[in-house]
Length: 244
Image 1 (cartoon, helix red, strand yellow):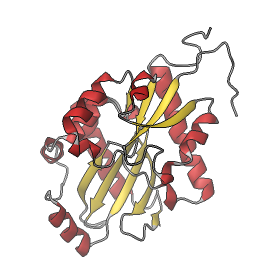
Image 2 (spheres, one colour):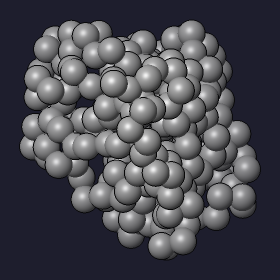
Image 3 (cartoon, helix red, strand yellow):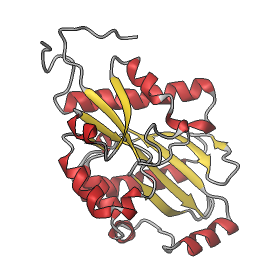
């Protein structure tokens, strides 16, 4: 474990959750520990807690319905935070209905919007959720209630489609894959004819619970490394400032 040094700048990191889960979703419980093992200090706060805006870096997690029920307030907040992951441009693009049109215009097969249409697709074929960390594939799982873990290597056709969707998001918002700390792509239709049901860049459920202890620790370390890289990129690295 990296140890904090008093004469080195340590960014204040907040994991921001919805007001209904101010301490975050239980599935994300290991993230604070993963950050600490990289010498990074994180804490959970509700996104609308005034202290959140005082943080050096905010990681948006588990916002629930706040993004839609309080859309204007939430959107304004994303622009006030000094450094936000995922970036505000990605959140604004993904939060608007046009993101599905942009995917389709880029040649990405997209399911008809609406809960009923997606449910019909899922009834015909099980869905798969693809998780990306810092723009690279992490793990995949069956998005049904069973949540069966899928091998990250076996479904390369599905990962190719997931990467294509992530690349459209990056192109439309002017960022690189590495700047997306996390992304979730939900696919339906099976391996032969998959379509994107949803692309989620706004605090998606990352499905840590589907991983065994070793895999979860490894992938949460990858998450923490992504945060560490973001700190360096944003001028928040340990040597970028000196403490008192």
